[in-house]
Length: 332
Image (cartoon, rainbow, N blue to C red; front, side, top):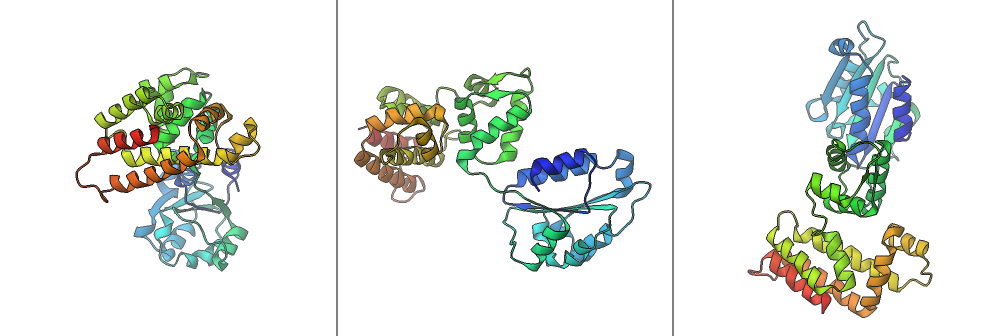
């Protein structure tokens, strides 16, 4: 089942005896288990009918013993097993899953890994439980996720602000969700969030960030690029060189792809580069400033300085100095 389907059923009080929540992205697993933990039972019912246990502290017989209890003064009891991936021989749950107690909601949170669907245990789970698989989102999908998350809360966001959030917060959906929640506390509903809001509420500078560096490098604006690099050098903790190099590597790699495109219509460029149509113009202009041959050299520079930033072939240069050298080579 899909996330929204499960949550809708829960809100409509349509419950199932077993929920097996698995996958590399923990955010949705936590959201579902948290909703069940907070909403299925009343506060009075929870005292006798809700149990939360952790995989490292339990085993299959213990889980089954909890699941087979009948509720007290309630229609249901809830048993939530967190970090279930740490349970030894979890496949021994199969007999219970095949014949679960209808008055129990057994919620199994099997996180941080893909579930092997080829096993007999997996086939029994698919047949007899609500199976939810939470896939990790790729970097290029995060801005869309941010847009959707804010839309559900009654807000919108500019492409630049969405990009800033995604690049600085990475792919950790829980972290992004927390920052969004803090961001909108003091903003009225229907606000369109901009880079100014990001700077004021989260602390990411709207003028001195890797997005602006990428943009100024694309334009070959030497003065502004050096301004940003000097800012990064003065604030190394907020602007780690490894992260900056990785983001620039993605940018210049996409420019290489651009040079190989035969169809350079706006929609095809956006699709081929996995970018928002909003940013196509930036890539078109940057491609005019960097030939295919120059881009190939830049990719080599980025790899070289990535290794140096990790201490290989670098005796004393600090991260700020390395970034200045790298930017000089990119621009000249």
